[in-house]
Length: 172
Image (cartoon, rainbow, N blue to C red; front, top):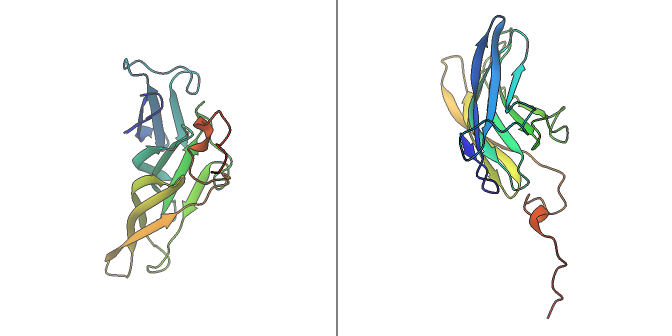
């Protein structure tokens, strides 16, 4: 659950079971509680990665009103990696993040062939997505904390400059 501080909209993100496995389910609600039909046409986004099991653990909104979600993706080989996805205000994947709006973070410190990394918490810090989670450290299934910060291409990298409409004041 995340709240857009600019609009008051609520963003809900979770996993949904489908006929073929699991999908990511995201909805945006207006402050009244109604689905925001400006988000993906019906207020909802469903996204599947084939037979891979995906699960969202946290959501955040940056200063430009983009929705970021984090969790993990269990591949069909049994390997789990942290995922971060970013959606624009219309509900479309924001292609300026990672590969088509998806960033896959494979810490891969653990045993081969299966390493399990789980994204658990997400924040936006200075306009950048910061994700924390669990990283498998050895064959005994011991986990260590993992932390990653994703870069973006904003000029000031804070995500807040879009709210400014006037010129900067002259220096004294």
